[in-house]
Length: 127
Image (cartoon, rainbow, N blue to C red):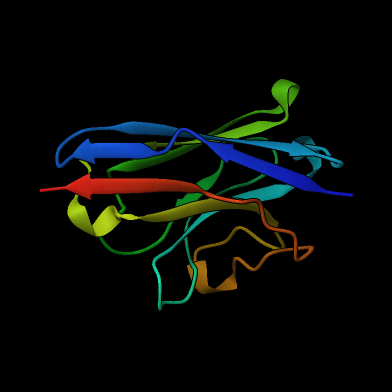
């Protein structure tokens, strides 16, 4: 069974930075396209970044995440990361990772490949 464990969230002031981690078990990150998502209460979960299998090719959702978010992976540790710099209050959300069916130029295509979600990690940014 696939399990996802996100960590690294916290409460920070605007302008700060966080590094989120996601450990995948029950599958191999090396074989998977992986993505980070975020969700605020009352809104749909949105994909913010994805990484292809090698980790060399990455994509970011349009909008404010570009230039501030950086996705990376360590296949040996079965872990993906999301570095978030210059945090803004609108980044406040619960962040999740998941294997996705594709990692292309359209974030709306980055759908969860198996339906599993972890518990997420909360990021709260104060102004």
